[in-house]
Image (tube, rainbow, N blue to C red; front, side, top):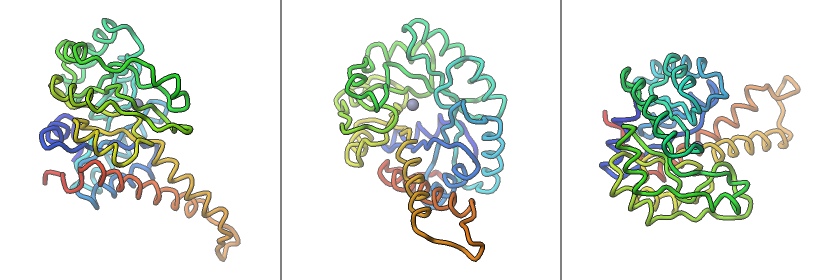
Length: 285
Ligand SMILES: [Zn+2]
């Protein structure tokens, strides 16, 4: 069933597991995520950034929700940068939006987020916002010094905006790391889990490592955003099939076959992270 993130994440917060939120782009990745969630009886969140065709993604998700009615799924706009794009996503059929004004001063972040929350909640759509700054993994040496989420500010932020969940800066970064391993601030996650009354989201979770990720969930993370590890697994599978010398009676490999190998690897990685997050078998049916 297509639903907002709020009930899903509340259950996860209470039971100390995390819901995996794969970044999706198209019909193939969306169906792969539905299948992974179905096979593992896990709740799941589709994260989609605004540079995709969000109307198409919403239509495809509604279609898949009919094809897989047993899957509990939320469709969330990832890193929406303005009130307008959040409104556009809601109109398209998204059941959740993230408004990311984390680059703005605290008061401006509060003001825009509160506006989005008021609009979204009026139509039953959940809202994620970000406080602190999750930087880029490619510039980790520099971006690791970006401000972490301050617990006192986080409490005030949630109170004044009524968001349903909060993306926190606790040591991860977006994309793939070069040589470094991210260093997660587990004590800060635990402190935020204690004082902040809504679920916490880990962005840039790719490359964190399975043990570290499981530890972050135990410390209090409730939603895990993943894109790079999933996408890279798919790309490597495509490279493998192209370099394998495999052929067909047609004398070439059909595009769907090549892409299909990539999507299968993407799906396998989603299933791996469902296991790591502790959400396997967590769907309430
Ligand atoms: Zn992110």
